[in-house]
Length: 231
Image (cartoon, rainbow, N blue to C red):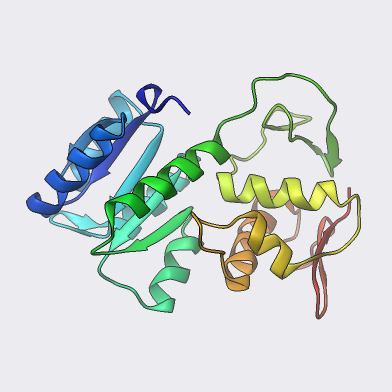
Protein backbone atom coordinates (compact mmCIF):
# COMPACT_ATOMS: atom_id res chain seq x y z
CA UNK A 1 0.00 0.00 0.00
CA UNK A 2 1.37 3.40 -1.02
CA UNK A 3 0.51 5.39 2.11
CA UNK A 4 1.48 8.69 0.45
CA UNK A 5 -1.75 8.45 -1.53
CA UNK A 6 -3.88 8.63 1.62
CA UNK A 7 -5.09 11.65 3.54
CA UNK A 8 -5.98 11.13 7.20
CA UNK A 9 -7.86 13.60 9.39
CA UNK A 10 -6.89 13.37 13.07
CA UNK A 11 -9.29 15.07 15.48
CA UNK A 12 -7.59 15.18 18.91
CA UNK A 13 -7.90 18.00 21.44
CA UNK A 14 -4.87 16.98 23.54
CA UNK A 15 -1.92 18.78 21.96
CA UNK A 16 0.77 16.34 23.12
CA UNK A 17 -1.13 13.30 21.89
CA UNK A 18 -1.96 15.04 18.61
CA UNK A 19 1.68 15.91 17.93
CA UNK A 20 2.80 12.35 18.75
CA UNK A 21 0.27 10.65 16.48
CA UNK A 22 0.79 13.10 13.61
CA UNK A 23 4.55 12.54 13.75
CA UNK A 24 4.15 8.77 13.72
CA UNK A 25 1.58 8.71 10.91
CA UNK A 26 3.66 11.08 8.79
CA UNK A 27 6.74 8.94 9.39
CA UNK A 28 4.73 6.03 7.98
CA UNK A 29 4.08 8.11 4.85
CA UNK A 30 0.49 9.29 5.40
CA UNK A 31 -0.60 12.86 4.77
CA UNK A 32 -2.22 14.05 8.00
CA UNK A 33 -4.50 16.99 8.80
CA UNK A 34 -4.33 17.60 12.59
CA UNK A 35 -7.52 19.10 14.04
CA UNK A 36 -8.59 19.95 17.57
CA UNK A 37 -12.34 20.54 17.37
CA UNK A 38 -15.56 19.27 15.82
CA UNK A 39 -15.99 22.57 13.98
CA UNK A 40 -12.56 22.30 12.36
CA UNK A 41 -13.29 18.70 11.38
CA UNK A 42 -16.57 19.57 9.68
CA UNK A 43 -14.88 22.38 7.77
CA UNK A 44 -12.20 20.00 6.49
CA UNK A 45 -14.77 17.39 5.52
CA UNK A 46 -16.52 20.03 3.45
CA UNK A 47 -13.40 21.43 1.76
CA UNK A 48 -11.04 18.46 1.45
CA UNK A 49 -12.59 15.12 2.46
CA UNK A 50 -9.96 12.71 3.86
CA UNK A 51 -9.69 8.98 3.17
CA UNK A 52 -10.04 8.11 6.86
CA UNK A 53 -11.04 9.90 10.06
CA UNK A 54 -9.36 9.35 13.45
CA UNK A 55 -11.87 10.83 15.88
CA UNK A 56 -11.43 11.58 19.57
CA UNK A 57 -14.72 11.47 21.48
CA UNK A 58 -13.93 14.23 23.99
CA UNK A 59 -13.80 17.48 22.04
CA UNK A 60 -13.88 21.08 23.34
CA UNK A 61 -16.90 22.05 21.24
CA UNK A 62 -18.94 18.86 21.18
CA UNK A 63 -19.04 15.10 21.47
CA UNK A 64 -17.27 12.89 18.93
CA UNK A 65 -20.17 10.43 18.90
CA UNK A 66 -22.58 13.17 17.88
CA UNK A 67 -20.17 14.22 15.13
CA UNK A 68 -20.01 10.61 13.90
CA UNK A 69 -23.80 10.41 13.93
CA UNK A 70 -24.11 13.52 11.75
CA UNK A 71 -21.41 12.28 9.39
CA UNK A 72 -23.00 8.87 8.90
CA UNK A 73 -26.19 10.48 7.59
CA UNK A 74 -24.47 11.25 4.29
CA UNK A 75 -21.04 9.60 4.22
CA UNK A 76 -19.39 6.16 4.45
CA UNK A 77 -15.99 7.66 5.35
CA UNK A 78 -13.97 5.10 7.38
CA UNK A 79 -13.91 6.15 11.06
CA UNK A 80 -11.70 4.99 13.92
CA UNK A 81 -12.77 6.37 17.29
CA UNK A 82 -10.05 7.24 19.83
CA UNK A 83 -11.13 7.65 23.43
CA UNK A 84 -10.34 7.20 27.09
CA UNK A 85 -13.80 5.65 27.48
CA UNK A 86 -13.19 1.92 27.29
CA UNK A 87 -16.39 0.26 28.50
CA UNK A 88 -18.34 -2.26 26.46
CA UNK A 89 -21.28 0.16 26.39
CA UNK A 90 -19.14 2.90 24.84
CA UNK A 91 -17.64 0.53 22.25
CA UNK A 92 -21.07 -0.74 21.22
CA UNK A 93 -22.49 2.79 21.09
CA UNK A 94 -19.63 3.86 18.82
CA UNK A 95 -20.18 0.93 16.46
CA UNK A 96 -23.92 1.48 16.39
CA UNK A 97 -23.31 5.08 15.34
CA UNK A 98 -21.30 3.87 12.37
CA UNK A 99 -17.67 3.74 13.53
CA UNK A 100 -15.56 1.06 11.83
CA UNK A 101 -13.12 0.63 14.71
CA UNK A 102 -12.66 1.76 18.31
CA UNK A 103 -9.33 2.19 20.08
CA UNK A 104 -8.80 3.10 23.73
CA UNK A 105 -6.21 5.70 24.71
CA UNK A 106 -3.38 5.71 25.39
CA UNK A 107 -2.76 3.54 22.35
CA UNK A 108 0.49 2.30 20.88
CA UNK A 109 1.22 4.21 17.64
CA UNK A 110 2.15 0.98 15.85
CA UNK A 111 -1.21 -0.56 16.70
CA UNK A 112 -2.99 2.55 15.46
CA UNK A 113 -1.09 2.45 12.15
CA UNK A 114 -1.89 -1.26 11.72
CA UNK A 115 -5.59 -0.57 12.21
CA UNK A 116 -5.48 2.39 9.82
CA UNK A 117 -3.80 0.27 7.13
CA UNK A 118 -6.27 -2.60 7.50
CA UNK A 119 -9.30 -0.33 7.40
CA UNK A 120 -8.02 1.47 4.31
CA UNK A 121 -7.40 -1.87 2.57
CA UNK A 122 -10.99 -2.92 3.23
CA UNK A 123 -12.38 0.40 2.00
CA UNK A 124 -10.56 0.46 -1.37
CA UNK A 125 -12.23 -1.30 -4.32
CA UNK A 126 -9.95 -3.70 -6.21
CA UNK A 127 -8.37 -2.45 -9.43
CA UNK A 128 -9.53 -5.39 -11.53
CA UNK A 129 -12.96 -4.76 -13.01
CA UNK A 130 -13.91 -8.38 -13.63
CA UNK A 131 -16.55 -10.76 -12.47
CA UNK A 132 -20.25 -10.43 -11.88
CA UNK A 133 -22.38 -9.57 -8.89
CA UNK A 134 -25.02 -10.78 -6.52
CA UNK A 135 -28.61 -9.61 -6.43
CA UNK A 136 -29.76 -8.67 -2.92
CA UNK A 137 -33.38 -7.63 -3.20
CA UNK A 138 -33.41 -4.47 -5.30
CA UNK A 139 -29.66 -4.01 -4.79
CA UNK A 140 -26.67 -5.34 -6.73
CA UNK A 141 -23.56 -6.25 -4.75
CA UNK A 142 -20.30 -6.49 -6.72
CA UNK A 143 -17.47 -7.56 -4.36
CA UNK A 144 -14.81 -7.48 -7.08
CA UNK A 145 -15.48 -3.90 -8.14
CA UNK A 146 -16.28 -2.84 -4.59
CA UNK A 147 -19.73 -1.58 -5.64
CA UNK A 148 -23.15 -1.60 -4.02
CA UNK A 149 -25.78 -0.18 -6.34
CA UNK A 150 -29.54 -0.03 -6.67
CA UNK A 151 -32.01 -0.36 -9.52
CA UNK A 152 -33.29 3.17 -8.92
CA UNK A 153 -29.84 4.65 -8.24
CA UNK A 154 -30.49 5.30 -4.55
CA UNK A 155 -28.30 2.69 -2.86
CA UNK A 156 -27.33 3.47 0.75
CA UNK A 157 -23.68 4.07 1.57
CA UNK A 158 -22.05 1.12 3.33
CA UNK A 159 -19.13 1.39 5.70
CA UNK A 160 -16.14 -0.91 5.02
CA UNK A 161 -17.22 -3.24 7.82
CA UNK A 162 -20.79 -3.47 6.51
CA UNK A 163 -19.56 -4.10 2.97
CA UNK A 164 -17.15 -6.85 4.12
CA UNK A 165 -19.88 -8.57 6.11
CA UNK A 166 -22.35 -8.42 3.21
CA UNK A 167 -19.73 -9.82 0.81
CA UNK A 168 -19.02 -12.71 3.18
CA UNK A 169 -22.69 -13.58 3.37
CA UNK A 170 -23.12 -13.28 -0.40
CA UNK A 171 -20.15 -15.59 -0.95
CA UNK A 172 -21.88 -18.30 1.08
CA UNK A 173 -24.61 -18.43 -1.64
CA UNK A 174 -27.54 -18.70 0.73
CA UNK A 175 -25.84 -20.92 3.31
CA UNK A 176 -25.64 -19.85 6.95
CA UNK A 177 -22.40 -18.27 8.17
CA UNK A 178 -21.52 -18.46 11.86
CA UNK A 179 -21.22 -15.30 13.91
CA UNK A 180 -17.69 -16.40 14.81
CA UNK A 181 -16.71 -16.66 11.13
CA UNK A 182 -18.23 -13.26 10.36
CA UNK A 183 -16.29 -11.76 13.28
CA UNK A 184 -13.11 -13.10 11.69
CA UNK A 185 -14.02 -11.52 8.34
CA UNK A 186 -14.45 -8.04 9.82
CA UNK A 187 -11.62 -8.27 12.35
CA UNK A 188 -9.93 -5.01 13.39
CA UNK A 189 -6.15 -5.02 13.09
CA UNK A 190 -4.77 -8.30 14.40
CA UNK A 191 -7.46 -8.62 17.08
CA UNK A 192 -10.67 -10.51 16.15
CA UNK A 193 -13.92 -8.60 16.42
CA UNK A 194 -16.47 -9.88 18.89
CA UNK A 195 -19.68 -11.60 17.88
CA UNK A 196 -21.47 -8.60 19.38
CA UNK A 197 -19.79 -6.46 16.73
CA UNK A 198 -21.33 -8.72 14.08
CA UNK A 199 -24.78 -8.25 15.60
CA UNK A 200 -24.33 -4.46 15.54
CA UNK A 201 -23.30 -4.46 11.86
CA UNK A 202 -26.19 -6.76 10.94
CA UNK A 203 -28.60 -4.40 12.69
CA UNK A 204 -27.14 -1.42 10.78
CA UNK A 205 -27.33 -3.27 7.47
CA UNK A 206 -30.95 -4.23 8.03
CA UNK A 207 -31.84 -0.58 8.57
CA UNK A 208 -30.22 0.21 5.22
CA UNK A 209 -31.40 -2.63 2.95
CA UNK A 210 -34.56 -4.10 4.42
CA UNK A 211 -38.03 -2.77 3.64
CA UNK A 212 -38.98 -3.68 7.21
CA UNK A 213 -35.88 -4.07 9.44
CA UNK A 214 -38.00 -5.53 12.24
CA UNK A 215 -39.11 -8.35 9.93
CA UNK A 216 -36.10 -8.91 7.61
CA UNK A 217 -36.53 -10.71 4.30
CA UNK A 218 -32.94 -10.48 3.04
CA UNK A 219 -30.53 -10.68 5.96
CA UNK A 220 -31.86 -13.62 7.96
CA UNK A 221 -30.99 -14.88 11.44
CA UNK A 222 -30.14 -18.56 11.85
CA UNK A 223 -30.90 -19.20 15.57
CA UNK A 224 -27.99 -20.51 17.56
CA UNK A 225 -25.59 -20.17 14.63
CA UNK A 226 -25.34 -16.90 12.72
CA UNK A 227 -26.83 -15.31 9.61
CA UNK A 228 -27.55 -16.02 5.97
CA UNK A 229 -28.36 -13.84 2.99
CA UNK A 230 -31.37 -14.49 0.79
CA UNK A 231 -29.81 -13.51 -2.53
